[in-house]
Image (cartoon, rainbow, N blue to C red; front, top):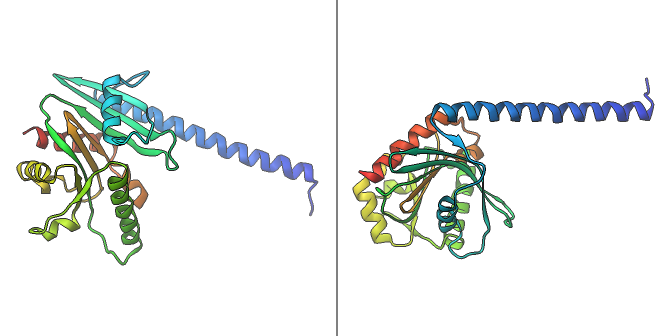
Length: 237
């Protein structure tokens, strides 16, 4: 049986419209669920990102001034003398514009950090599909850190087992090693989800979105928040 071209076109438009409607509906539902979780955690949505947060993110993401960073979906929680944030970051002019999604950030006078960037690695078989994705992720992270963040790779010649668990970069290797010896590097290993931790001065961030590219089941927002708090406390001890 053949159908008139007009009827086929209408059918395709209906199917396409239905798909768009379902995507929008799911997105709105996810947004409502996220807002509810954040409200329970004491966060509130901000109409625009605070200047102090923008400045610190730019100092982390664009030391050479070759990026224009914008923050979206910014949430804030004030706790004593600390400001906690959740936000998305993007480079307006970059080819791969997303710099991170649902990034947790902390501004605290109890932090005094040398510039560093650390990516934790889950256990994986380098010969598997996941292993291949991890190798690509690591290559991308190292290239980005060296080229855009102007950081150098810091390795552990006396502790080779750590090279399979974390990838570390910094501006001052001596200061970063001293900090991590004090904090305890093994404390940042997350078995189920990779995390990228960045710090400078009184600002610390944790981005769990790297795990999404590996098709791994992620933690819910509340669990990631608790993980971030545990990480932050280590740096403040």
